Length: 152
Image (cartoon, rainbow, N blue to C red; front, side, top):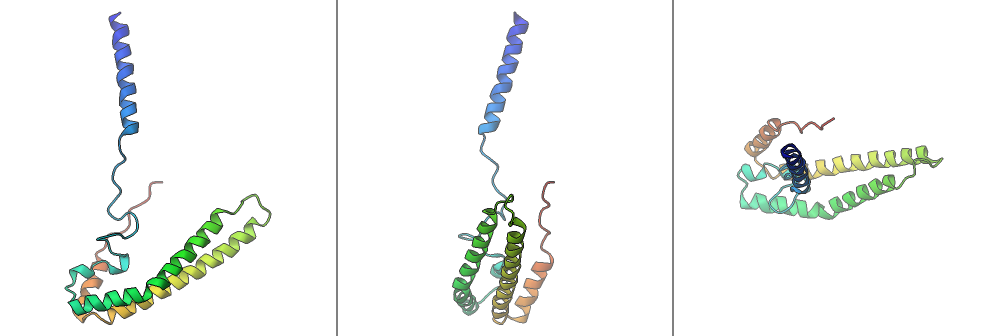
């Protein structure tokens, strides 16, 4: 009788622990997770708050970013549409391989446009900075840790 009660309590305890583990809130995401939001800078802007920008420099950089905002938004929308077109492909369709090739070429073209766009913005922003500020940003970039490894 005592042994049966102990086994029953042990099983009940394990079941309770399993239920609690399933209902526990997930761990918070890493600090670099998700898109920039309030108080977060896009990757290109990382470090700008640490290099002592003057008010005039801040205003110029904001004006540069604002002038490219619609272009960047359009680029993101194109990339999203390209992504969605890939997701809707049917792998069993006879034209799947050719459709994938078209989407891959579109993705390569969009990636090239994005890099050129970012380079143009970065060039304009760097024109506003002093030599010392540029050196500080370069040292920040050199000391940036590598991205975390994905679990395999």
